[in-house]
Picture: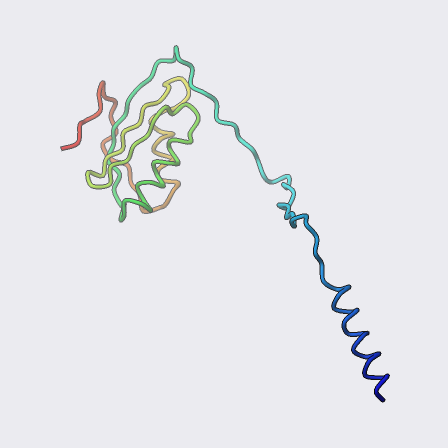
Length: 134
């Protein structure tokens, strides 16, 4: 009986010793492969000789500065041909500088309304300089 306990103890120790992994290499996780539905769109740089226009317009329906205004601002800034986009939540005002050959006021309006159905573009007009904050 005493030898059986020794053999059992030796077997348990050897199982634990062999089952522990002391690998020095870290575990590498890979992202799933891109499917055919995924498209990678590279944003083109704006031609320095392009004719830039500035547009200002009101955006109605925003409820917060971080969720609404920043999301709209990021969507417009990612558009091809847009040099800069700023959305002022308090004044409900968007100011966008863009290449006239690539971007139209209608495409700006479509981008804003595609973010959420609650956003409405009002009083869009081109300006020589943006309206300063009060």
